[in-house]
Image 1 (spheres, rainbow, N blue to C red):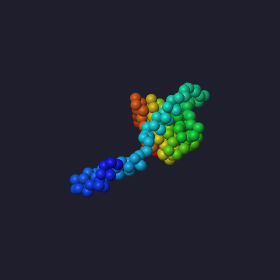
Image 2: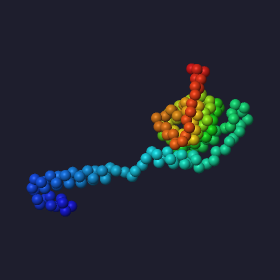
Image 3: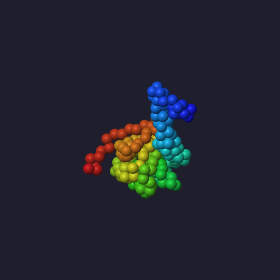
Length: 173
């Protein structure tokens, strides 16, 4: 403020340039201060979802179906914004939790793969919901072929293994 008071008193050309620069700088600082918001990263949201899904222990649930080695553990958060999926994508996969996921929600997934047709159905639901996919530990076969590319936003946690092979889609054409 002392510089601005001096600018009003002294009107020499050199002082005018200095005062003009100071004014521009003050205007820029004021504008940036007004528009800056607290730092937020989408990574914060992804990290929170990852921690939420990592906080519960998934257990192997053996089924009576000889085609299903074990059932997947699927958990939808109370606010329906985070869906945790751990296990294979089964041929008779229950999609109700995927349908219940809110638009722009997050799916945190670890899967050895499974049935291509069910994975395509799951991927279509995620795409329609504009969901964010977070892959952890491993995403193999049908998980990598379909879920990895299901939406416009996919995060792969560090040290996650992603591997795929020919899924034989000619059966589905």
